[in-house]
Image (cartoon, rainbow, N blue to C red):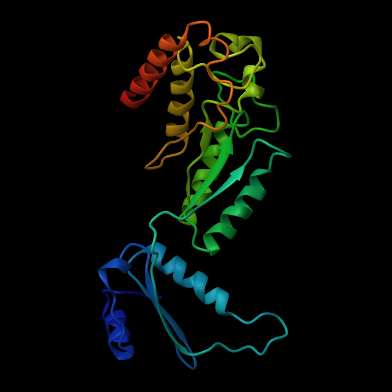
Amino acid sequence: MLRNDSAEGKALLARRGLAFDPAMESEGYAMAIEPRQAFIVAASGAGVFYGVQTLKQLLPLAGVPRELPTGTVRDWPAMRYRGIQDDLSRGPFPTIEFQKHQIRDFAAFKANIYSPYFEHTLLYPSQPLAAPPGSALTPDEAKELVAYARQYHVTILPEQEAFGHLHHVLKYDLYQDVAETPHGHVLAPGQPGTLPLIKEWFTQIAEEFPSPFLHIGRRRNLGSGTGAHQRAGPDARLRSGLCCLSQADSR
């Protein structure tokens, strides 16, 4: 493994007639497989890592002659962000060890975003009621998972549902004032407590999962306007919806 700006790296690239383009700087690599040795040249740790993944994929399977084809590879991503989402709100909640296994597999195929989807299975210490004990990701587990994923050049970008599909939260009387209908599945965006609740969720997410983005879910809002907002009338519903969007954007 060689740095592209080292004397050895430059000599290898020149000998094999390989250019190391600017597009390769952040995650790209060049590989040269020769009769008795293989070289990976990169400008970053991510580039070295992805080059190793490609080399691993070229290794023969068991029972096949132990040989590699000679040749050269230049590779870099066409897309900066390459993600896989996994719904963690339905079915058995995966263990931390299984999620680590998934991260290793995602990284082996050069995915760099893991997006777990949460409705009620991310534990908020200030709002713990909805999270099933033993079947929700705790802050300590989130910290462990983020640190583990970083070793594999994977960013964890959770999606927290923040509109529909929230029955497992809204079924509790504690949240009746922010529900469109009692014990329903849709948040009422114009209710006084709705935006503070969402802000509390995503403030914790931003602290636990450092990332360039926040993924705010708004799935299946069927039923919006049929309860708390229906009683307010169509003009009031429109005003509250626009106000909600404006406040969410400013926060």
